Amino acid sequence: DAKTTQPPSMDCAEGRAANLPCNHSTISGNEYVYWYRQIHSQGPQYIIHGLKNNETNEMASLIITEDRKSSTLILPHATLRDTAVYYCIVRVARGTNAGKSTFGDGTTLTVKP
Amino acid sequence: DGGITQSPKYLFRKEGQNVTLSCEQNLNHDAMYWYRQDPGQGLRLIYYSQIVNDFQKGDIAEGYSVSREKKESFPLTVTSAQKNPTAFYLCASSVTGFNTEAFFGQGTRLTVV
Image (cartoon, rainbow over all chains, first blue to last red):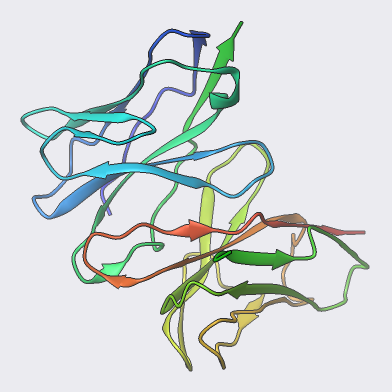
């Protein structure tokens, strides 16, 4: 799996968009970008994933640059409950284990009132 | 409800004793995984299993053992050979194949005294 680089921490005001960056400059053509988050002392929760097109679901949007070397997770209207550690992971999705991933240290997002 | 259950949530053991952590899933997932998380750090893969009666070592398997006798169960034994067993242990499961995500349990916090 390709290595990812994320800032260790970020703050966001409640109600504003939270934009979490991730660099994955060594990503290969068959690797997807996945995002998970972990609220303190709980198991990680899947958020979203994508290959090269931008993706949106009920939780977030994922913007992947054209060269695929970086991506941004967007939480459109952050709430206090979005305070968590956010992990960006790149992995081959086709025919392999979804859970066999390398989780780095992630970004600690703190949403402030 | 379908999900993945880890028990107990907190576990205390004396140094030198083996201890087994439970992980059960009713999602009909083929693949299951065990991760270890130390304070302020990401997740590290201990063992994973793609199918019943088969499992592979992850990045930090020394001092741990697993079994996969049933599809829904993947217990992890922390043996006395594990030098620093105190940690947060997370179990996950996933379908195998294309474009999937992992589902995590709520974790077991093991403290060895």
